[in-house]
Length: 128
Image (cartoon, rainbow, N blue to C red; front, side, top):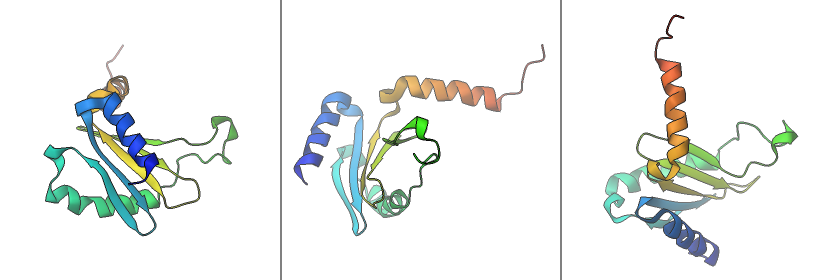
């Protein structure tokens, strides 16, 4: 693991503590585990990561900087799941990046905001 990735893992451990689930880096040739919380180090996870890395390599941003410059450059992608938050940092014009996973409480405000939006989108509207 290079120094940059070691620093990243230390930073996430310090900020997220026990809520830090996993960290993987990927490039055009494969992927490497940077950190896996012991309770998640399973054969199922190891079997799932190659497909995740393949999708991460081909990640197309929803809005590219040239499509709408006022947003600025994309810094990361966040995927909120029921039990985890995935944060993807990808290098522009490359198949290289890092994916971190965290327990959802780390992104509590985001989780609650998404939950409120989902409630509005899925529940029948009240008549007024």
